[in-house]
Length: 307
View (cartoon, rainbow, N blue to C red):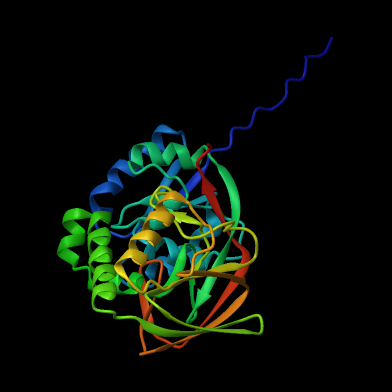
C-alpha cells in the first residue's frame, strides 16, 4: 500500500506595520511595549517612525500593501493621517492610544493600555466606517466650530503632557463657562439639503460617532458611523441654566426636544459664522470658516475589539 497522503499544514503569520509618532505624548516610550505585545500574539512586526507632519500618511500609502494590518501609535492626528491614506483600501487599521485625547481609540472601545489594546485589536473584528471631510481633511469622530475648537486652540502643550485628556476637559469647561457668562456666542448659518438654518450658537458639531470618552458624552440621537450621513448638532444656550441642562442631557443621553439644541442629518453641509471662527476636526485646527463638510460612506476599514 502506498503512503497515506497527509494534508499540508500552512501556518500564516500576521504581518503588522506599526506607524509610530515619537513626538506624541506617549508615543516614544510605548513603542517597545507595543512590539513586545505584538510578538506575544505570534505576529511579526516592523516599526516605522514618523519624522514630520504628513509622514504617517506617506508611510501608509507606500507600505501598507506589504502587511496584513497597520497599527498606529500616536495621537488622533497620526491615526487620521493613516486612515486618510488608506481610505478605500482593504488593509485594516488598528488605533493604539499614544496621544493626549485619543478620541478615536476611546470611541472604538480600545483599551488605554497598549498591552491590552494590541491583543484586543489583533483578535478583534473588522468594520468599515464613514469618514467626514472638511477643508480637504478627513475626520472620523467629529468636526466643529465654537467651544470644541476653542478647546483645541487654547490647551497648552505642557498641560496636555501633564494631564492628558483631562487637560481638554478643563479647557473645554472654561471655554463653555466663558461663552455663556460673557455671552460670547456666534451667528451660525448652515445649509443642508436645501434648508438654511440661522441660529446664535456656542458650538456646532458635525458628528460621525455618537459619543466620545468611553460614551461619557453623547452628541445626539441615532448617530451611526456607517449610515452614510453626518449629524449636525447645534448647541445654543442663552443662559448658564441652559448650558447646565445641555451638559446634563449629553452626559445622560437625554435627547428629548430642547429649544437650545437642534439636530440635522445630511451628506453635505456648508457653515458660515459671524465672526469668522477656526474649524477643528478630530482635535486638529484646519483654518477658518466658512467650510464645506461632507461624508465618504464606508471609506475605511478599522479593527474593533470584540465586545
